[in-house]
Length: 301
Image 1 (spheres, one colour):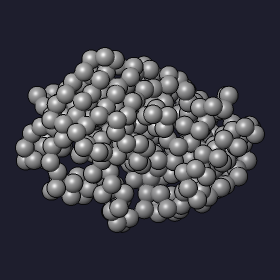
Image 2: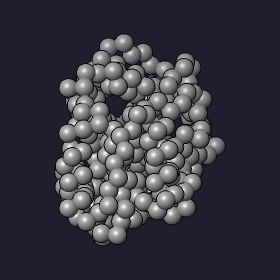
Image 3: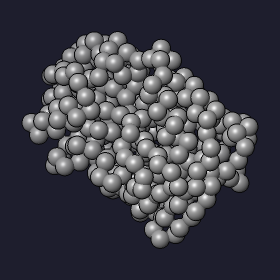
Image 4: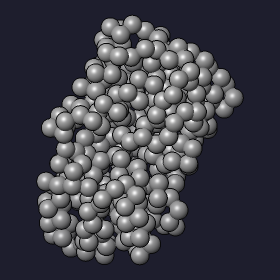
């Protein structure tokens, strides 16, 4: 649709530099589709939020050319802009939100979605006021996310596997208390994930039954096990079959309150968003995203 005005919001360093390399490809293809494109290079997540809000307020479509971190930041800012719609050209390491809602990873195809796609509403996760599109997690995940963010850029998507192995070396189980709509669990284990969407870490289906349209949080508790058992179970997360194991429990509710016996930073969309204790909820249908015409409900892998 050539009448769409596009604010292309790019973080060139995302994906270990991948975003910078695909930016000219996206600019050329969008212009070739007859779209009016204005490009802004972000200097921070806060800058990305400001640019997205300004663009949407002026009637343009903010299109995020980056990874999940900037996607989540922009989505959180746009929730307060009436009628705002955003687009995504996946260019990060994980691109998990795009994966779940069906946006192609190939740059030309993703740009075609910007030109021809349909706007669909999706739930937005909120952790003590901080918005995210994917999954808020903590515990072992806190250590793994920190290591992944510090990993060499050349590792690309392999940074997640590298981080998991590094984090495991020094891990000791924590004691978590999780309150889902008044149903309280206290357990010793690895992690807690409060999921708006299904995947994180570059395709790990940690919450395989999460639905971006149900207004609820899927909560995944991973109880204590040996490091060897945990390591052997990691491949099953990419299929979502880990939830069949005895040490994994799935819960679902409108609100989850999480605390632990030691401090943890909570990560979502690859970035730190808060510390324990924390409450996670969702805002039903709070964001509108351009997806392929005829795409499903955002629950396909």
